[in-house]
Length: 412
Image (cartoon, rainbow, N blue to C red; front, top):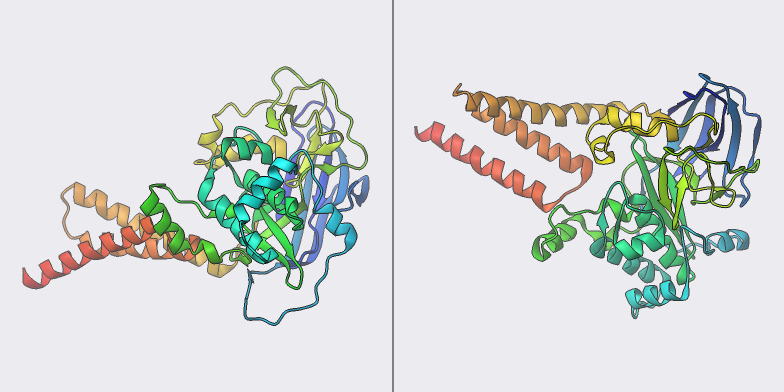
């Protein structure tokens, strides 16, 4: 991975950068280059993350290059049990209540209702996971951040899914942590997910926000979730991803000093507060490190992106422009097999699109290439992103038309 942050303000900017930790699915993290030299490298106030602290002059850039061995994960219920216990200090950390992962008696009662008569911690974690998938909706950008906002609005992005899942688990004395990072492909694919600790098994991944269905009609939604096998996805991690930091509300060291924010500073609704990103903290803590939190010069206003946030989700240059002042940018060197599959998938859809355009223009002879292109693209899309009812419906449609065209060629 290569990471870059450029100070585009007129004055100095202070940065806290999370150095990726060693985890069961992330090992042998190697820093290949880090410039400039950090002013300090030390643990955060909770001992969860290692922080590098910088002070960048106007126009100065921060560059980080690293390598890590990343692993898929699959829970095997037939594997023999192991003696895996959690350190008492870690157990206390991952059962705590905080502003973004809020545990209360109301949350505890809600979690108990969801798990019902589940007798084991593993079954409790699974029921919470499936309930979150089926009763909450994905929305980006979220209206507000935090588990309480997710409970109230019943919609949010991957961060809110993860905050609420952690709150439910902790309410039932299931240690749960929030992993903040990125899919390890392409550019700026930020993501947040969970790991829940089950005695004898260790840390099981839980990525609830990826199991979305585009049409929430009862029958189709249930079919979609059945095809995605959501009942069996707890403990599975199919895509490589890199963790930048563990848990939100990272207590920054050296201490973060809040300062007055300019009138047009970027503000986010975080844990019930309208926080000016880069000027204010959550009582000395960064809301999250993905992978940095900045402290801007109060004399120079941080400019807004100038585009609606939802447009950035569909156009990468806008996304880069929007988040670069706040998070910096990063990219991964994709393996050849991943790049080849991407080229084939995109190429298949482009061939299909070209065939469709030519057919509209009444240029004959492109029916079969069009259908084969769409079919190939859809199959590879399923291979990349998982099966859904609408992807299977597209395959059925393309196959039906393909059979009709072949029969027409045979029988004239």
